Length: 373
Image 1 (cartoon, helix red, strand yellow):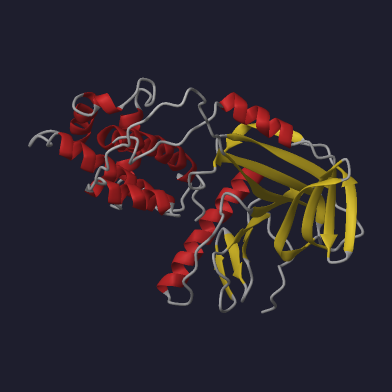
Image 2: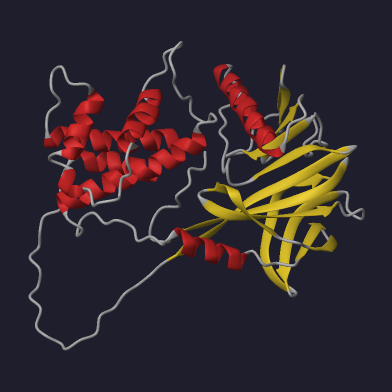
């Protein structure tokens, strides 16, 4: 099998990055689509039978690819994982007699803040050297913070919460786990929760729609398999859970040992994003060949991605190019951003090209707040 990115096919489809290139070429045909994995190639492609819109095509192709990777692992043919699944991918959908090809990329925009205080110099007594804290909850917290897998991260974050709750008050013999957890948070742990940090119903949601479906896999009951369509809701749920655990750890051990990240208001995030999405030219390249087109940028607020604004530009396919390996944007002639594709992507059958940029703004002192597998 050749190693070129395949010509776009199917009623719609998508391509996702693998965390490492495959050692051999493989195809799997399902009733709803064809999965193509090529030796030493960065992308796995999924051509779907159905004519779907962009969002549905992305989600359906993602599901089919994950099922294909399950089969390949069970057969011992390949042990592969996706990477940057919600951050970097390609989608194609029917547009007239051809396709609209959509490139999606995510731009990291970490920020930091510092503070200094000036005043009259006075003698400040040296703080006493305190021993670092030791608690099993810290282990679960660390594993939740460093995991690239969203469901592993959620499970460890919940175990950190469970560990802190059980240390504060034992679970009653006939008490349900949810009632015990709510009693602990409303009682001995309540001092660690500043007003307004956790909204009403958050604990019920974390337990009912997070803990229960991710801690078991009983057929006939509701459970979440990793990498399924619940990823987006679980990402929001995980962020709330980690904020809850952070507050409790800081209250228990003090801000000297456990710190909460500084944050900005949503309106400030939005104004920074809107000011960033101002390029006026888009350049497609294939090696030394290039085609430049004027760009009209649409800033999108619904649905949000990573709870932030994103932008979209759609242009007619440049007739002078047969492939694309790089996409650049410029503002008044100056470079704005560059998207270097991991492979040359063919334009055969393409009528329109759309480029979408997500902007991921976050505190640079914390881990990138998006799970990439």
